[in-house]
Every structure is written in C-alpha cells, then in structure tokens.
Amino acid sequence: MHAAVYEANRGLSVQEIPTPRLQPGELLVRVRAASLCGTDLKILRHGHFKIPPGCRRVLGHELAGDVEETRALVPAPQVGARVGVVPNLGCGRCERCADGEDNLCREHDALGITLDGGFAEYVRIPAAAVARGHVVPLPESVSYEEGVLVEPMSCVLNAHEAVQTEAGDRVLIFGAGPMGLMHLLMARARGARSVVVADPWPERRRRAEEFGADETVPPGEVGGLAGADGRKGFDVVMVTAPRPEAQQQAIEAAAIRGRVNFFAGLPAGTPPPALNVDAVHYRQLLITGTTGSNARQYRQTLELIGSGRLELGRLISRRAPLQDLDGVVSAIAAKKELKVILYPEGFEGNM
Ligand SMILES: [Zn+2]
Ligand SMILES: [Zn+2]
Image 1 (tube, rainbow, N blue to C red):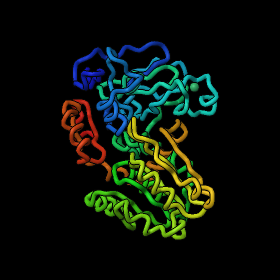
Image 2: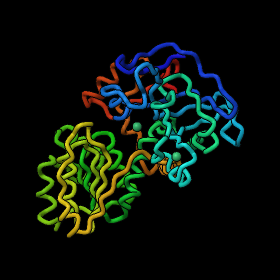
Image 3: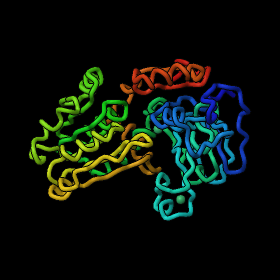
Image 4: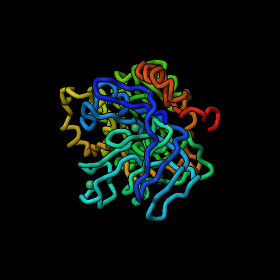
C-alpha cells in the first residue's frame, strides 16, 4: 500500500509498504480521508522523542475511513462501517486510564506517533483500542471529511470544558489559524455572547471575521479592549498561538473571575514567560491548560458535528492526494492553508 513514512533525520516520503496483517483483536481501517495538524509539522521539523532514529513511522492521527477487515474479540463496528478513530491509547493500567483520560496517560500510544497512522491506504487498530471503543461509527450525516476533523475539534472541546465556556460569555481567542477558528466555532456553538480574535496578520483577521468573529484586533490592541485591571475584560480567553507574549496578554485581558486556557505549547527552548500572578490572585482567575482529548470528548464532538451545529466544512481549504504531501506540508508551513484533506489514491471526488 502507499503510505507517507517518516524517518528521523530523513524526513517524510510516500512509499510502498506492506499492508498491515491483523492479529486477534485487531481491526483494519481503509483510510478515506486524513488531515495534518501542527503536531505533524512539529515532528517533521524537530522530530519526536517517541520516534527514535532508525524507526520508520506512518504519520497521521486525524483520519476517517471504512472497516476493511476485523478480528475484533468484542462487539465492534463491522466490515463496511464508516468510522473515525480516537488516536490516543493509554496503558490501560494507570489512574488516568482508569478515568478514561488516555491523553494524560504517561505511557500513552498514539496513531501517527508511536503506532503507524492514517497517511496510508490502511491503518491497523490495536486490540486494546478496539476493546476500549476507539473505533467510532460515523453517523450518516457526518462525511468522511468531517469525520477527520472530529479529532482536532475534540481537543478544542477539551479546552472549552476546562474553562466551562457557556451562554453569555465574552470570549477572546489568540491566534486565527485553523485551531483558533475551531475555537471560534466551538465558542459560538456553546452560546458565547461575543467572540474577539487577536492575530498579527491582517488576512487571518479578515478570515476570522468571515468565520463570525465579532471583532478582530492585532494582539497589541487587546489591552485597550480589556481596559485596566480587567475591568472590561473577557470571561474566557483561549491561547492557540504558541507565543509567550500571547500567554502574558491572556492573563492581562481576563475579567474578574475570568477563565484562561493555554491550548498551545511553546516551541522547545522558549524561556518561560513571566506571568502576572498578582492579576491571577486579585481577579480570582482560573488558569487551565489542556492537551489532546479523550474518547468521551471524541464521541461528544462527533455528536455535536452530527447535529449540524458546527460548520466544519468551511475549515477545509484544500484537498490533495497523499502523493502531494510534500507540497501540502510546505503550503501549511507557509500558513497558506487551513485544514487540508489528504486522500489515498483512487478516492478523488468520493467524499
Ligand atoms: Zn492533531
Ligand atoms: Zn495509563
């Protein structure tokens, strides 16, 4: 089968590799669509400590497809079922796993990182993932493309659960990249009263307005909007931009009892920013961080998408065959794309 294989120090190449063979308990998904995110770009630029030199890994953790073959030992989607896949798989033994928080398990596996992922014609799903319900049927109303976007959107849900975004909230989002726009859609779906998006680039601000932002500003103007001491501050502040200044500004812009989420990690080696802890104290702020998502959040996001309350289709800026991955990666690195849907050969126009 065709697959996009990553090797440390060698980069990514589309090559022919053997189609996976199933062991008892496992399931094979024929990939119909997949997408890249910041994590994939980070791996391509800086490598990943879980992909040591000499290891060859098929990348891709955002995917949807059809069950091609099953050796499941538990009730699981049957051959032909349209499915999405929860990519994180915890050890199954620790406290975090007992709480269903595979994304926080110290030893979690992940498709496209420690296991071969979805940038291929087929992806093998481990027995433990099948047993824990990580292969999730897509309702009729959800296309493969939307199925691909369940995973990143579920990470956004994780963040909004942490700060409990609710009806009437004034929301500020740092960053108008694909994740920032997903936060915008999620905030709207949860009934936010207003959403302001801060981004340095005029064309990205314009796009955020097209996506329904009430107002967009360069990050430097956020302070003016929020006023001194958070008097006109925001109830919810999401930081999707991987910049320490945005993290600092987020705290300054929070209202009394404001809730802040650090959604993006900082590039390795960035000195930790000085944060205004006094503001956290005197305004009784709630500061949170989230990373990834769990299977419950994946299913809940799928439900939300199925209900039609999130217009995710607008996030897709390009569709390309897997063979064009190189060009897609450069376009994303140049911030020219939102979400790009990759499809294995033969599935053109078959979404
Ligand atoms: Zn991702
Ligand atoms: Zn665990």
